[in-house]
Amino acid sequence: MSVRKAVIPAAGYGTRFLPATKAVPKEMLPIVDRPTIEYIVAECARAGLDDVLVVTASGKAAIEDHFDRSLELEAALEAKGKQAALAMVRDLATLATVHAVRQGEQLGLGHAVLQAAAHVGDHSFAVLLGDDIVDPDDDLLERMVAAHEATGRAVVALMEVADDDVDKYGIAQVGERADDGSVSITGLVEKPDPADAPSNYAVIGRYVLPGSIFDVLRSTAPGAGGEIQLTDALEALAADEPIVGIVLEGIRHDAGDKLGFLEATIDFALRRDDLGPRLAEHLRDLVATRLA
Ligand code: UTP
Image 1 (cartoon, helix red, strand yellow):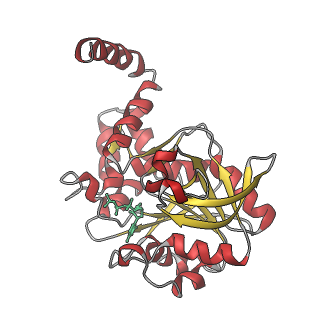
Image 2 (spheres, helix red, strand yellow):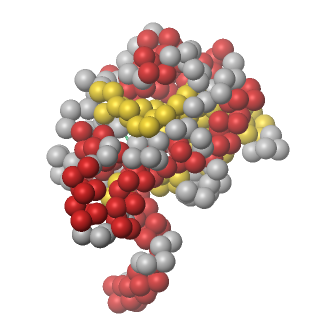
Image 3 (cartoon, rainbow, N blue to C red):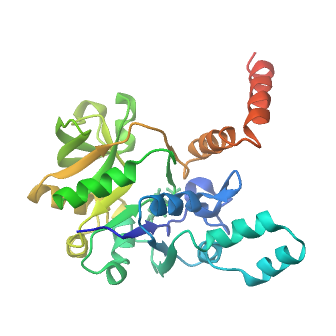
């Protein structure tokens, strides 16, 4: 039951970010100076998941190149004496072992996860959506892996959302919240009307799943939007035995959404010693002049 592998579905079209994503994968759009997906691979590495499979698609080879060595660039940096840049570029290739598999046709998130079956085998594994960024100081993924290793059950990350926002997410039907912050999930409802929502706990892009999910996915019929939905497979799992929800208390950004991406950029830039103080000053000036 020990979890070593992570799967990052990153084959989507990123239509919310067109035209930027016409030729550049949305996972490669930089938050400050690192592509979005690098934050996610770093999160895997922090949680001890050093074998990462990215599910990509045609036109997304830049993702693989980013995590590969680039001997030509390294030689050029060495020749110019740019040691700090050289170390940064080399470190990238050692963050985790990054593999890639293609999803030939974008038939949905569940179908993307299914492309990982041969790589993952029967083992339990984590799934991290390629555009969902969790605060690097948060140990959400570690807590999820620990919960899976203790129970053997599927684990999903949850976030409490406002009543008005429940219709944007998959919402969990939950039991009591335990002392360790986990809840038992007995059902999931995709984008419910606020009046019908079973709770305010929204499923966000982190999952730890048993290898048996692949068989469930193989028999999952296309659902919303004609796509094979991971949520439908999870619902089938939850019908057999409750799945575990781990509640995120800290910050998470939906970097696949324009506003979420801007918020993530400002958040991460403000944390940086080299950029934060001057950016804060600029933001204060902007607010004073534009919003006065
Ligand atoms: P999203 O719906 O957020 O991503 O899917 P998208 O389709 O790329 O973006 P928009 O909505 O058109 O702007 C959630 C995650 O599932 C992956 C996406 O790459 C994203 O990480 N996904 C989705 C796949 O890998 N394959 C699919 O067929 C669908």
